[in-house]
Amino acid sequence: MRVRRVRGDERLTTSFPLQSYAFDKSPTEQDVSKHYRDFLPFHHGNHTLVAEENGATLATASGIPMRQNIRGTVLPMAGVAGVATHPLARRRGLVRTLLNQLLEEMRDDGTPVSVLYPFRPSFYARFGYVTLPQHRTAVFSPDGLASLLRADLPGELRWRRIADGYTDHRALTLRLLDEQHGFSVFPDFRAVSLRGDRKWVVTAHVDGELAGALSYRIDDHLGELSADTLLHTGPVGRTLLLSFLARHADQVDRIKLGLLPGETPELWADDLLVETKADVRTLGEHAPMARVLSLDGLDGIAAGPVAITVDVVNDALLAGRYHLDGTGGTLAVDRTDAPPAASLSAAGLSALVYGVLDPVEIALRGLGTIPLEAAEALRDLFPARPPYVYAEF
Ligand SMILES: CC(C)(COP(=O)(O)OP(=O)(O)OC[C@H]1O[C@@H](n2cnc3c(N)ncnc32)[C@H](O)[C@@H]1OP(=O)(O)O)[C@@H](O)C(=O)NCCC(=O)NCCS
Image 1 (tube, rainbow, N blue to C red):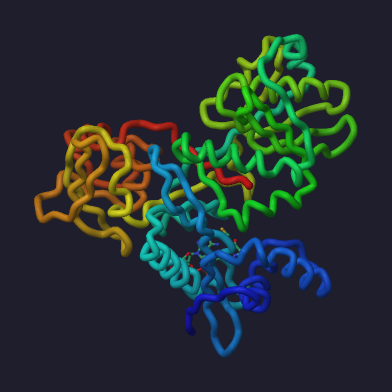
Image 2 (image 1 turned 90 degrees about the vertical axis):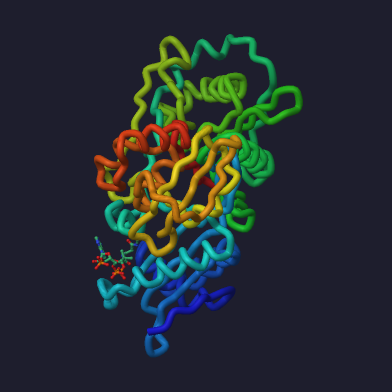
């Protein structure tokens, strides 16, 4: 068995057939080649590895070169996707080999963090990933927003097909990337696939600045208006977008949309009967997971005013002793021989960086050995931040 990187048209005969078998509806031969060709441009910058034996592709895994805001600093992020093994070659350790190599290569290319959506969280927990909160969605009838129709709102709305409004939508995601911990964006070559979706987009503009964007589709007259995340820069942008949705009271029965962290839809209008939920029961609906690939690569992110020495253990990418110093206001990472105050697994360290778990909980979950004093220092070094991953087109 050999592992190699594939690029360009080679994907059509190596990684794509395995990914298509694993993730698509069973297609006809004709569908297959058209489907592959249509999607090829959206994969061209991916870091894709395949495992081959006797000329046959047996497994594949890709890293999408994304970007993510980690505590205020935008860093390269590896979005792991397209992980699939030939049905006759499963459980032979092929994906274990591929994923370890993929993460190592992307780390060596200067990518310090990684995010993925797992088919089964415990599978990726073995690779050092920790679970983040699931996206929350809100479902409500537009009737409940009627009061907003009479509100005097500053700014204006623009309503277009996504092909025409894509540039504004993308500009807003890039602005939120700069502002919001956890927010991430796809590279241009992939994000642009949104242009081809059969969606509408409404954008909110205040004093010539973008203040909100919502992409959506309507499934049927008197059916559902199904939207992506309600993206906005604050209450004005959000309320403008909600006033647009209010205008659909006699057109759709209900509206479903994704929420930025911290949203409380029950406060949006007095008579809004809304259900807000985060569902991880269904296969394919699991919460995102993330991990740190390089601690040195986090040098310079915002940190609290403490210093501590930790061991990171049981991880090929991170294992070692580190002095983490936030006394200058940002994280300084150095190797050291000083005695460690705590030891952390890759998932435990990732939980601290992303703000997912308190140090005490990390120890309780078996993701580290953290004496009480060290727990306090780690809590101060990585102050609580609402953990979040945004990864939509
Ligand atoms: C999931 C999948 C990629 C695993 O590939 P694989 O090559 O069989 O995985 P490996 O043999 O390298 O297994 C790695 C480890 O995970 C375990 N594992 C494999 N499949 C598993 C599963 N479905 N559930 C739980 N654990 C699993 C293995 O036992 C092994 O553990 P070990 O290293 O402790 O022995 C493969 O079954 C597949 O293609 N499934 C369909 C597509 C899919 O779901 N992809 C994942 C998208 S996120």
